[in-house]
Image (cartoon, rainbow, N blue to C red; front, side):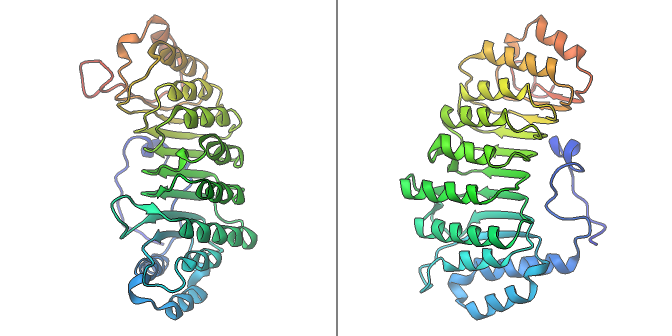
Length: 322
């Protein structure tokens, strides 16, 4: 077991660190960490060393010890088989619980080609057939071509995974692909989801509203972080439906984007604070709503017995920290 390491927890992590889906199991060892990092290094630099024999040999030897893995999508211009390695690696990681997908060494747009997406899809299909261990997926720094063939492939990927508890999307435009279908697939196909984190990339109301509708079915949701997204109306719909989430403990909506219906936003926030018996952490910093708060809101706030942390900073209070 890895001991004597210190991680400073701030904000929602402080409230959720012991309850959430952990990136590493409690019995995670230094050996597993070394094997994980070594295998990731072999994959991320495959386009340069092109040693498939070594990569596959490593996978055969240690894949059963890999519980958490970051799969890098890199250029494959020097590889005769192109992005087949993505499928090959995924299909062998049958014990992985937490999977992170991100780009590296790509151009500034970080756009993933259809060939890479197609091999990613095939890999997920094989993984789904061989294992049910995957519970958490994180996609970051990935941009997708807004084409029907790409959208269909992404939709098939999320449809192939059936038991996710945690989904994190960061700096990716994946929700702009067939907004309603992709957003619905993320929520509806995973009724046991406990964590949904969307940081940047949801820049249209259609996707946000679709997520809001899906959340009505997510009765086990405990954490929602929805930050850095520009969807003025969608965020209000999101807030309304969250009032009916019986286990919601952590909510972060902090962003600087304009809210088109501020009065409605405050009404929905009041409803959430009034109804929820589980909410402990609420962060709405950066949303200029303080001037719209009325007596009814503060009454609901005073009567709530579960709330432990409230962040109103940069909401028009005249202070950067509240």
